[in-house]
Length: 285
Image 1 (cartoon, rainbow, N blue to C red):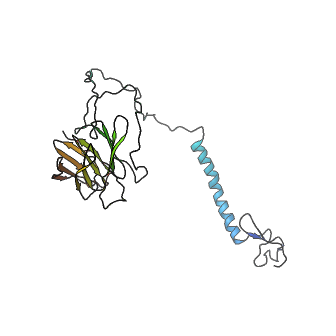
Image 2: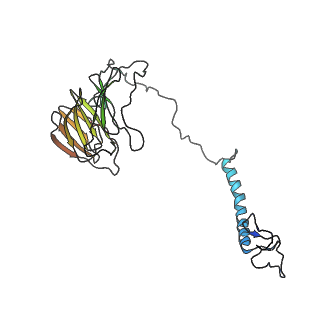
Image 3: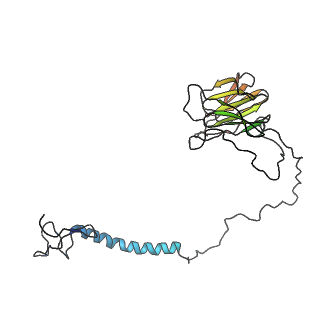
């Protein structure tokens, strides 16, 4: 300690000693800056401030032009970029549309309702209300997305969660009837992404993102047969004419016999650059 007043930090980051005095020639003692004199760092800062000041003024004017209430209109004809907003209008001479009688369906066994994804004119109540609500299992978050749609057959609702666990619930009251884990035995940690469910007759078919196509008894959940395809399945199964169709992440279509799971054939489609987490079930006409 020298006993002199402690230096203070100036507003521009320059150390100033109030006791320092100018030396002859207008320079300060080494290590000190005399009041009224400009250090090299201050000179550079002052130059920068002088250069930026016009830009700041111009910037204020520029922003005023952008966001001001009054703007100078450019010359030329104005053309609307919006479509006609008249709404839906029936064209003159359009044929009359006649719907068939509405049909109340008792089942929804496959995504899309049936193998062709054509359910016709379906009936529904004027006001839809919640009948019941239950937890179907694990799900939620970026890597726990539930892709499988629920399907309904013979008074039972079937679901599959992000852990590839399939559950059956009573359509009447939501009571759980059974639950089956369709993951392979050597894979307990991976998340199920993609795949889905489809039912026909007495069998529920579950395709998951962990390479498995599993056939289950709709009444008990007992496994009938299983196939490991070696790649994640991305679509729900389509069941038609005694066959089961599924697609995989590499866009390969597989066909199996519904009764015993025997593979019939495969077809490799063109593979896009980007794979999809979920794909629609194949439509069968």
